Image (cartoon, rainbow, N blue to C red; front, top):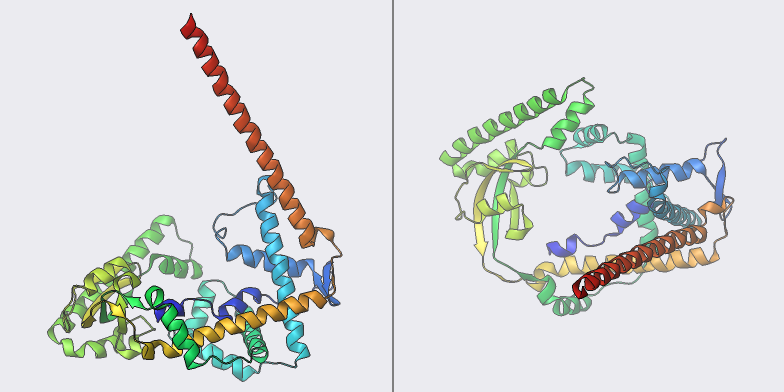
Length: 395
């Protein structure tokens, strides 16, 4: 049930609201207190900047000191304050319930993440390439685990098989109807321009744009030649495809399973990949296929017509999904109660969400009035032109 798997999960929700350490600098100014806990300017700046970096503005280099971006800045300011409040209330609730995370739990979580991207060495290398501080990353993992454990402690409702069956029947057409599907295996020789450029930047070498372009092209040529060589060998011995996948594929999500991707619909893969995979008969090997991920060699395995996914095959996924929904509801109720009884003092009124929202309304009202004025002036201009045209016609 791939569609449900991409829906809300508790861990992803909590990662958003808990992604920054909140240790105030001694010399920093307190902008607000939450149940007596000081939140400083540097706490706010850290989370505000992280929010920007994780948004569509990451590459835009917007200068928030420019008055024309005031509304946008206020929107992100409001979002940041809400994140801070939610994070602190969750932290305090976990502390009150004596919930803690051990180093072993953090290590186990790291192992799971690392397994999907080729091991710990590969994981920490990617952190370095993306300029993510290792200690902050570990702190984020611990924080997310803490919040997940907190949610589990407050959500006691159990989802039954009958609940899952009811959900299945009510959503059969919209969520469990499938188009034609194929099952395929693949070998990926990775070649992604952005990743190659990131590695070059991380190396610290001073390179011109021309140098970078040449190195990227060289990397692509090398990957293509490797893929073409493997394809020729596999075409002569297709039964060894799985062995080749385990040895050479650079797709960590399925290399250990012999490159098996399971069944998928055409729309679930990038067009170039799907186009090739859906043409293959079971047992057939494709030519080298290029996508944004690199170069693929695909083996057809099976095919089945459009229909419905059987309940027995998605039952556990549905139960898991409904359980997550129940946890989210429990989290929302807990946060609402925590906010209602919390004592939040804004030592700097400009950070008070009510004041931020008032400013946003004023900006919107000003813009609405300006727009109405422009519309009126345009309408008056049209009337003048029509009137003058009418006078000329009479003459």
